[in-house]
Length: 80
Image (cartoon, rainbow, N blue to C red; front, side, top):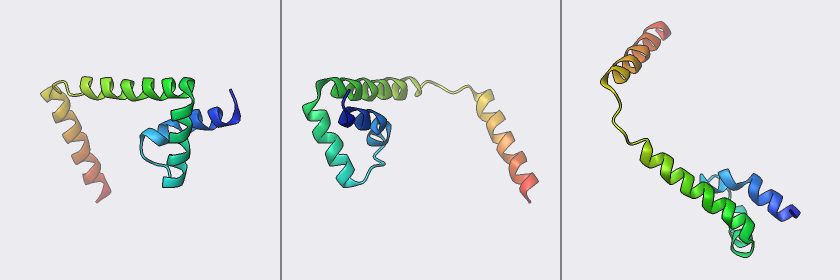
């Protein structure tokens, strides 16, 4: 793995999250376009995010919603 690959892989999550400067994003994009192994890593992570996002749409049990709401109310009450 050359230094460009190492940098691309290290910044992959930031790239996917849109947290890079425009200049840095363009550099990573060009690298991904020219480097099949790094593009495969990017593609895998992007697909994984899609699967996780879809699976997280499942119904949340009402009991969990109530517990979270209660915990938030308790935190607000202790902050006052």
